[in-house]
Length: 162
Image (cartoon, rainbow, N blue to C red):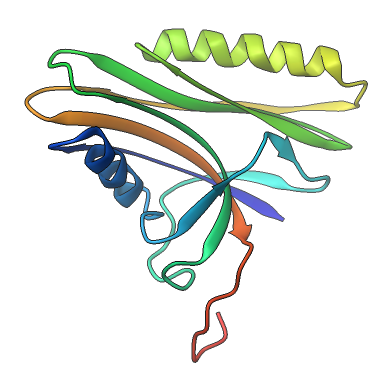
């Protein structure tokens, strides 16, 4: 089962609007994202795709996701959000963080992944990575989002059975 990583940044007049704009850039804005804790199922892969293809699922579907986000309204603020992952024979883990810079977010992700490895007596495969996005807030609110998108947990109705 592929877990797809998508990401985006956005601006709007409010933080919620900026968050929605960032989800739009990742093309997950028309789904109801249901946040998961951070466990990757056994046998899953992590694919960095940037954005989902249009019309993937039905508008309003409940879609399982691990989500990292950061928003601000302060002009000049730099914001970053990211996901880190590491896979094992038994499954894997995602860690999500927000920070003021990409470097700070990467450091937090690495520390949290190390903690997760220490907690689990798993056969770690060495497959790991991070995806971090950042944004500088200017005149409007800004947002940065990274999501690990699993699959719909509700099925909408489409004529083509997708």
